[in-house]
Image (cartoon, rainbow, N blue to C red; front, side, top):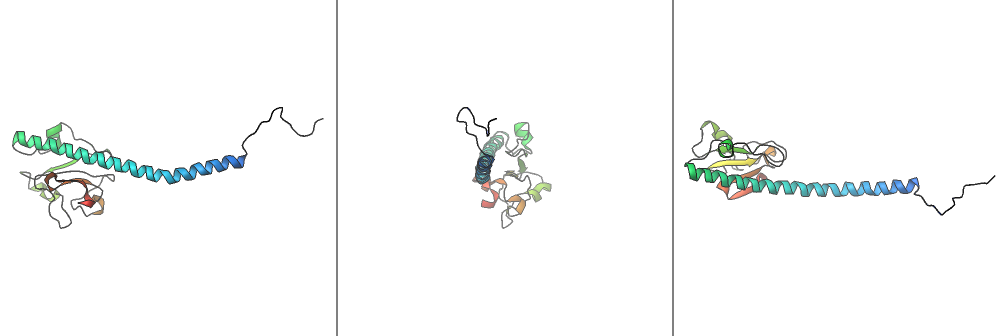
Amino acid sequence: MKRGFKPKHDARAFTLVELALVILIFGISYGMLMPAFNHFADEAKIKTTEETVKELGVQIDAFYKTNGHYPDTLLEVFGYVPTDQWGNPYQYLRIDGGSVVDKGKIRKDKNLVPINSDYDLYSKGPDGQSVSPLTATTSKDDIVRGRNGDYIGLAESF
């Protein structure tokens, strides 16, 4: 009877410790790289939303030139309400010639001064929440149109 096992050819295998070490290295790498990847993905969504706000503004301005007044809703311009990169509907409020009842919904800067005089157009951002003052915590991640279209970007940078 033979003692010990001897393979016929020189076969090598990974030990359990080596496999665990490789899995650990992959796990640490994943943990370090994912936040950076998520940051780049979030930045891309913000940039895309900024471009969409700009494009929607162009269409709303074209509506104004054609009809002599701003639309009451986005439905009036597009036939539907477009959604942002996070699946939330874009927010629109007619200011010039709009309802007096809606005046309290006008977006305001840190001095509580309206950021537009024609219309407000914005995305509620990643958290999907917003209030009129841009300085509120829930509004800081909003992508807003300000200064009647001269500024399009994050509310916290306005």
